[in-house]
Image 1 (cartoon, rainbow, N blue to C red):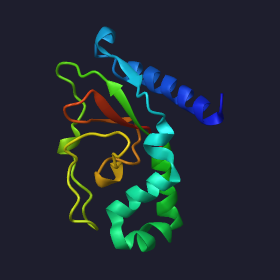
Image 2 (cartoon, helix red, strand yellow):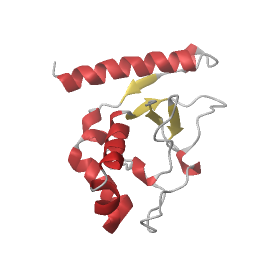
Image 3 (cartoon, one colour):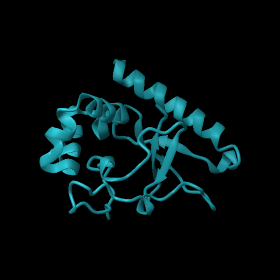
Image 4 (cartoon, rainbow, N blue to C red):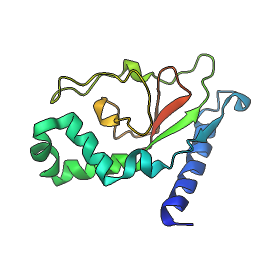
Amino acid sequence: MGISKIKIVVLSFLLILGGLLSYGQENAENFTIKTLQVKAEKLNNSPRQIKKYINEVFLNQANELVYQNPVRYSAIQSFFNRYFILEKVPVANEKIPKLSKVKINDKYNSYLQHDTDFNALEFNPLKYQLDFFPNTKKMYRIDNTNFVIIILPV
């Protein structure tokens, strides 16, 4: 088993365990979470994909604001190591905020809009004003799906 596969297995286990512990108020029978069949590195960890996401959000200022700024670039890479899309069946009265309620990060690209169709392979989390560096695990429900975004703490 390669290092990236081991990392995915360990992180999946920790996420499931952490989810069960942090959502103790939910009935354990109603809490189901399983990883997508697509490998995590295909979703968000490839340098090529991260560069595509950065360029989409920052457009012609990406070089100055991200690539020439080692602290910001490193922070973005760190985020992608702590960001996952997992399947979690919604439950009644769920308290997970919906992605549609999160503002778009359109300061440098005014053409960005909320995604209307969800495709895990093309989803760009940098488009959204998510809490990229939370103190505790953050979750966001992708509207009208069984999927949630999970961002682990720094």
